[in-house]
Image 1 (cartoon, helix red, strand yellow):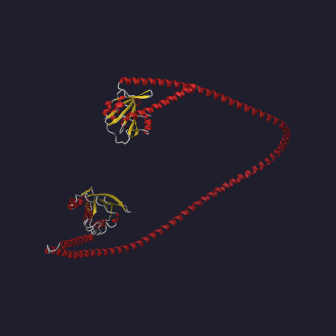
Image 2 (cartoon, helix red, strand yellow):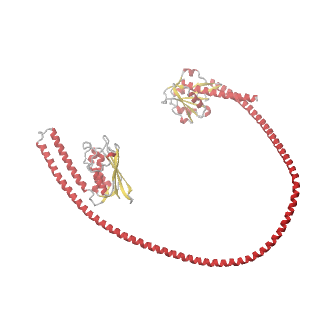
Image 3 (cartoon, helix red, strand yellow):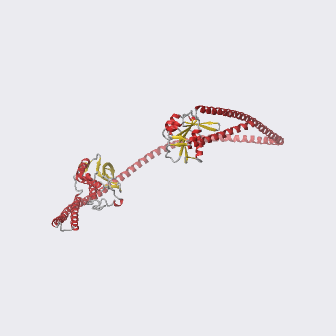
Length: 587
């Protein structure tokens, strides 16, 4: 027992020594890092120590980092699983037993201002190499490797370092001897512990066997006591039951005799009953045969009745079906007749209304033409008079008067333009001639026509392979030209306008009709949501004439043309990001 306690004490002491050694290793690494001058510091606000490989040293370093700083910086400890992962550290520590190639490590950290601290590596193979000797650490320095990474060791650090390989080998030899002695002591203690463990196990086994034997004997004694008690009670009962048994046997004999006589009487009665039952069985057999014959006849009658009933039901169903069919035919006939009458009346009404509408449209066109002619004539007179006044009184009128003349002249010109636009607007949708239009050729013609505007604003108009559609070329040209002109006109300041035209096939409506959907997207000033309801209204302007010129009829022009072709037009926009106009044309 005493030997076991001594072994446990020695093991505990060895564990304490190991903990002290780990703490000294961590303190030594901190001291070496503090007594080293680094050429360039990393951008990290922390002083970073990296541990290469799985090593308990990282736990000791992290514990010490909570209490100490290096170079007046908080210390951050990180772990690397492989050499290629090393980056952004001030110090790297690794142990020889982790089997990392020292040349590979040095190559990885070269020119990165990183100090390499190793343990138990060959002499002069690392920047700073340490070895554990007893309860302390010794080290050697390779100043050439340190200078290659722009790192310098302080004087005190260099002074206390091992300077020759002979001393280093001696340290290793001492360390190995100490380690061997420690291992021998440890193995001796472990052997003693194992022997004591085996002795204790044997003693425990012997005690357990004796306890089991004692339990079994106690159980056997208890069972014997119970058996003795049962035998005593049984002997008393047997004495009492013997006298009662004789009385019961005599009574049983008398009862058995009575039962035998009763059985004989019952057997005679049973014999008589059996003869009567046989007679009744003969009668029952005859009755059963009669019933079977009657059942067969009834079954045949039921089959005939079921067949007749089925035929009757079928005939009734046919009659009902015929009645319903006649009723449906008559109902459809009268309904169709009534609908034809209503349809005829509607067609007559539509024809009358279309005739009236055509007449009104013609009158409206004539009125628009006459009105535009009558309005343009006084405007031409005003423009002519203004021109005469400018020529006759040039130099006699002051600047304000001349500016007023110029304003009147421009206003009359805008009025004349609006009258022409209104006349064109009234004629939209009247063209019934539809031809195949190649949109690529059409856009090519439009870009040539507006080449001056494109050049003036440095605009870029792009479009892909567009389809061939069915419609009026003049009207479709007006739609594209108005949308492109607007995209160029409403551009952002100091930003070259870009217009992108594309298309896709879509399906709209309850009849799933196919449409061409065109998209005209720009990078202009965009349209606010509050102006959404005004965009397609005639003569509606969202900006003043001083900002952007125009009559305010272009988009209403596009809407009327697209709707006359059976399509729709709408837009999506974000202010300062651009606008995309969509319009559809039936395929």
